[in-house]
Image 1 (cartoon, rainbow, N blue to C red):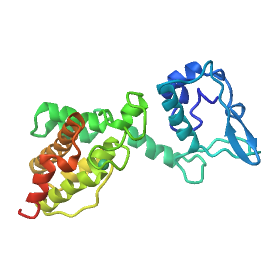
Image 2: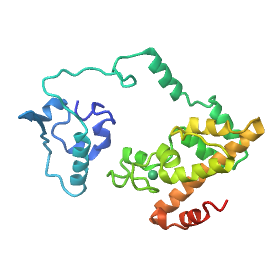
Image 3: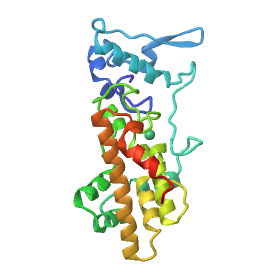
Image 4: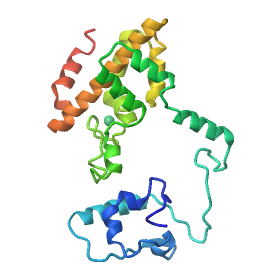
Length: 257
Ligand SMILES: [Zn+2]
């Protein structure tokens, strides 16, 4: 089902493009009826209840962008693929690892580190939402159609990649500058991990006893919270990060200890 099913891998198109779906005359068609093959090239063919106008045209462009990522193959049967294994076959081990990763209930040790760290409760609550993937980064806004284009979803710090929680806080070049300096200050060198939970646990492990570990968690919370505040200041003031006082001060102070 072209609109209803997650055949493209990034969610149902009906949910993502609700307005276009409402205008479609092909609401219940399978993918193969949404276009035709022409000399080995797949051509999409949409029918709408009326001409698209205004923002609908932009959404349609976005839809065709999404569809460009879909590789349709002529004369080949559909088949199920287990995405967690390279070979596409199901394995118990890969599902076990996946489910472990999903286990972010309150019993997860990362939550007890967050809640017992010496930090203000709003910052702890923020970190808790980071762990659950519930902060309003632009990838989430795009999914919920609060924003509509890939350009609007770019990271406000670097402007190069779609903003996700993991990118913004852990892998963005701007965030990495901060993390590298924090690690240098603490006298450790380590690989950067893009998963919040593992990142925090690794950071806590810098401390050698419980109270030191809680101190490290407090530093971690400070960095993550500061990145979020800077990000918000940039988003809500519309200023490029290079022009903000924060970054100019930061670069001036680099190397001065
Ligand atoms: Zn970035």
